[in-house]
Length: 65
Image (cartoon, rainbow, N blue to C red; front, side, top):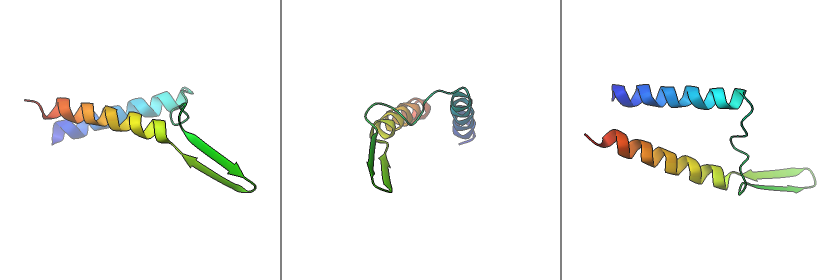
């Protein structure tokens, strides 16, 4: 459990650094934005799929012994 928390913390720090450097995380092609009048709907489809795949791979490699 401790190892998982450490790796998760390192991943969060890395993502935070990428965001501060200007990498457009969350604005990938495939993310949907609908604007109508004063309503804006944003659904990060591609970002969600990418995050899911990365977290699945991370958990797969962490669970192997």
